[in-house]
Length: 356
Image 1 (cartoon, rainbow, N blue to C red):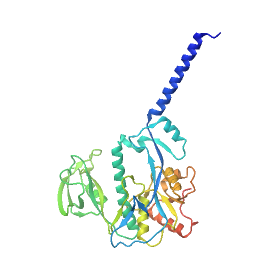
Image 2 (cartoon, one colour; image 1 turned 180 degrees about the vertical axis):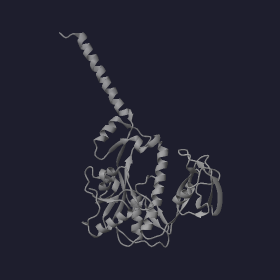
Image 3 (cartoon, rainbow, N blue to C red; image 1 turned 90 degrees about the horizontal axis):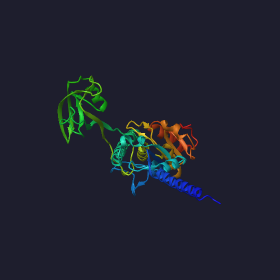
Image 4 (cartoon, helix red, strand yellow; image 1 turned 120 degrees about the horizontal axis):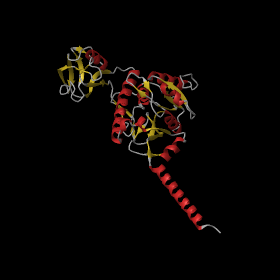
């Protein structure tokens, strides 16, 4: 005959174990972990339309050339800064070859809020649009003039109340300057406490101010006037990039530049093929690395691309796994991408730099 006390204890143990399992399961699903997921996002044809409007439009009188095929920029779908990834989601995603699980601090530094992240991403997109225009125009043979511009002012700095964001600097101590580097070089030759004369263009007028330099916080021997400089470009032709701010970040820059170049020059870069790629770009046409290259490759393959342009610094990551049937072309500069695509358009078996 069974002992009722023993059965009661066994039953109690089972109940406690079951409740504990339920609690632990709930904890696993509900307690967030400090990670985000990166998944393949959609690809967008820079030669086509975005939100029912041509991605690139050109001013009246600008000669453009017909082209075919597509030049897709690729995207990554990243967990929002204000979203939570549970332990179960993180573990499940870890075993999904299309998904990367990375520390949240790598994507959203300094505990960025969703609003701050969106603003930063939009600013990066704006910078990417400018840099791609300049790089493409110069590659196509146009001259793009540039001048240093005040991009930011240090609160309470030496230039506060003397300069304004948006001021275009034309001279420093009476010397004409064409780049931010030239302006910084003249100021940097001073000693803290010296006065430097800055001539700017502001709202159509010219203004000269004298600013007393101050020692840098990290090195008292270095002079500072409390400004951050950007670049003001003068474009020889009107080009509008109509990508909205729902797409953020700098990584579409290379594909933007290729589309502009393809439209402004005779012939077809694509050879009629569907080509995709990624890479940040500078105004000098240098292609920089990006994040999520594996997810972008999968997105390109899902969109039907056969060739994928990879920044050189991302080649190791790109080749760490299945190539998804893509020909991986290595690029370091816009000129590399142009020459490789021109070669492949003529001969699909042409030897071009590749990730290997």
